Length: 114
Picture (cartoon, one colour):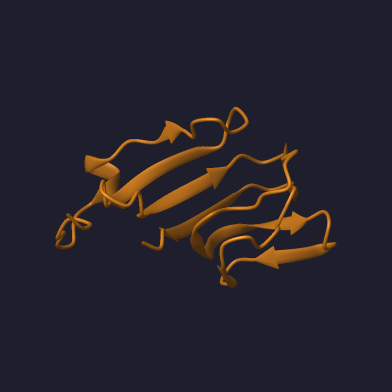
């Protein structure tokens, strides 16, 4: 099985926001498409204003992130990323923790290799 075929639709009317499992309270997601076999998915991710995350993140999947609104600062790298910036992270790449003073919404694509 793969991600579903989806023609344009209004995700605001059809998909609700939910708390990200295992994440700090207030970090919410909206899964847009999911491959149940691999776990690969595309989602919107939202951080509230004033959020300070506490984890250094390292994943076992490819992660592509596009900042749609707001900004976030990687506290280890001492770099701020703003609206319109993009990242493509291979498995094992370290990132975070983050300071998100004004909130942030990203489009994220996770891809697990077989």
